Image 1 (cartoon, rainbow over the protein chains, first blue to last red):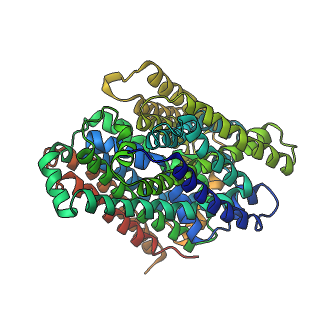
Image 2 (cartoon, each protein chain N blue to C red):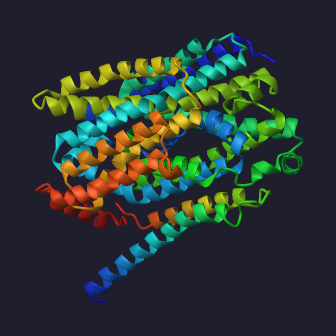
Image 3 (tube, one colour):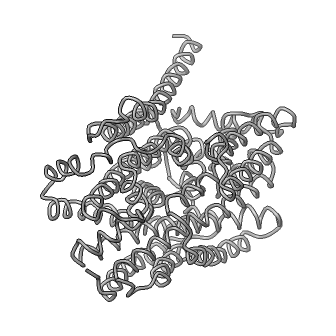
Length: 489
Length: 69
């Protein structure tokens, strides 16, 4: 069964129009300056804070890559994604308040800016920005790839891959550029609601229509695919993917920047539990689809095609189009946040760092220009269609993982120094890069883990042989005083 | 209660929370890869990971109750 390209275009156009209305509405609240455009002047309420965090985190990977991973590896993929969620929720409890406080105290707009101010070196922020920009392009591109694959598969080539990816890029650009963080956050509310309702509705529909309800489905699962219910993923590769994702909440700048935006403590708390509940439900839905695909479309050679083939061959066109809209919403809500954050980093941590006398208006212009540059770069990268989607996404987190030891040091170790932080990030990312390029996994341990160990070790040892920043103690004292005042742990 | 005792109690509570979270992190890797590895049922690793995540979310929500403006 092939879905008419016209129906797909109509579905996507309706969704895009709704997003444009939301985006246009938020534009009237945009004020002046970089902080207003990129972090909404730290004035977001609970609903957009929670749903922009959730929709930014959860991308097309969930209903394409994770479904494929579950299809081939079974419940281990469920464990992988939930271990990520456990790690994120715990990290949020400790780091979100610290970053929120430090952001306000030191007027930070971007994640690397916090590093620069704590280490009293613009080079730390600049290097962190370059690492993020280089590593996150593959991660961003897989979102466009996911939509390209889906559109092509669903319409039997009626919408080619190149056009499908373009369909994702245009709303990404519009939502990010129109009103910055406000536009992205409020369209993320729309995207988040679409993601959860369409996927949940489709799950119940598929289970009841094709599998005879939950009871018969579970019986059939045990009878026909019991191997999927065992822990099949070998431990070391599992750790190699899971550990980078465990620290996603700190290593990925697009989620890090969202700790700056809640307007008060209550909002911060609601953002965390709202995201956690959303993530829990969305993960359960996604991995269930992986198991269901194994029963309904068995024997696929490319696991990432499981969801596209399920939609193209089993469900009615109207359900397929609704699901496609939900997955496109997931992709766009992630990538527009990434592009907005990266653009703010180029303006603040590269342009402003190298030209301290530049005006705020100039910085804003540079940031806005890079929204276009990053969107087009990600799109071009997507056209090369590299490898398995899950592996690419994990490589991005693995590469940015080398920044995490420095982030820990910002809040927990006043002796950490700028030269040591710089060396730890550079050596770590080179090790991860070499590991991926040459396929090196010494002692069977993935290069991402070696990169993390190396960067932590270099930061620790290097800080003992170099001089700590003059005001590091004061930084931690001010943050800790605020932590106590608000009852944070 | 003296100021020192109050501060000491606060630090102990923080350490206890950190210990609880550390145990959860260890369990999420160890249990499925040992005792539940070959259990071919949804009541095995699948349910374990699901319940552990729900418990972690509930604990973090409980922890955040003490946050104030």
